Length: 196
Image (cartoon, rainbow, N blue to C red; front, side):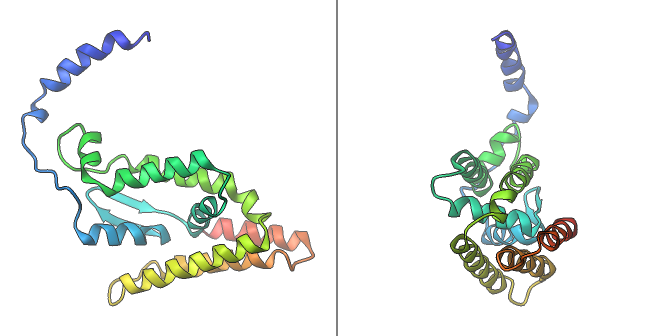
């Protein structure tokens, strides 16, 4: 409330800026290559386009899958992730969040922060998840990998190492039930988190 008196002068200066006089066309949707890169960006570093750079580890991918497997939990995280994804899907949001100048996704640092937060927040629950949830994670990851290779057929597949780490993480998650020595499990998790 205290800063509300500053809103009107800032808005007047913003509307009088030369950036608002420039007419830039904003497409309704991005080109197909952008969406392909956006999908594949969850398995490693990727320049998506329109100043959208992302570099997620396989652990983050598993964590994002995990929050959607749990139906009644993590509702705020699911909502925030869906909103962040919608912001990246439609160019109008990149235009508005860049001060109405041109389409630029420079806000993706916040999306990366959200995904990292999801990974850290859910890690303990992923480790302690049920066998059925672990199998669901493995199936979803297999489907993601299959779609990734279909989209990247004949193209640069620099993210293959990340997909190998993804399956290494899933093998440790699933194999955790069969390991009786908790020290081995802790060392395995520590090594995978450090590597990815």
